Length: 102
Image (cartoon, rainbow, N blue to C red; front, side, top):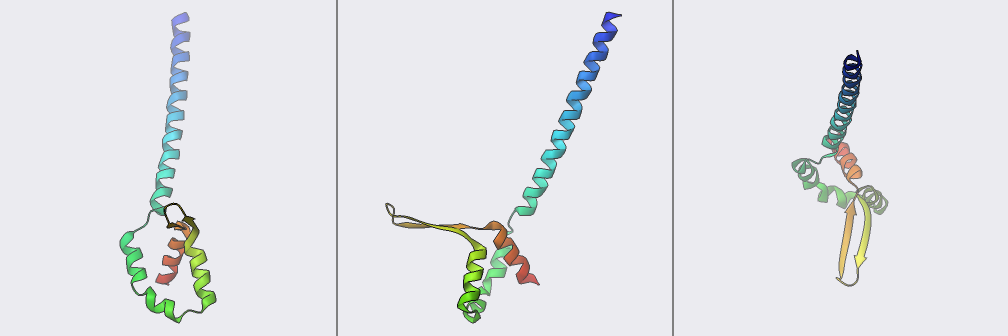
C-alpha cells in the first residue's frame, strides 16, 4: 500500500516538473520569436538608406532633427580617447525603414 502512495506522489511530482518545463519552453519560444522580429535585415537597411542622401537634402532642418531623434538614442564623447560614441535606436530605425516602404 505504501509503495503505491509513493508511486502516485512521484508521478504527480513528475507531471508537475513536466508541466513547468513545457511552460518554460513555451516562454522561451515566445522570447525567440520576439527576438526574430527585432532582428535587422542588413540588406534591407542598406537598400532603404541608398537613396537617403537625396531625400536628406530636400528636408528642412526641423525634419532632419526629427529623423535624427528617431534614429539616434544617445551620443557620447570620450575625451581620453577623443572619440564620439553613437548609440542607435533600433526601434526607431525599424520604424523608419517601414515608413520608407510605404
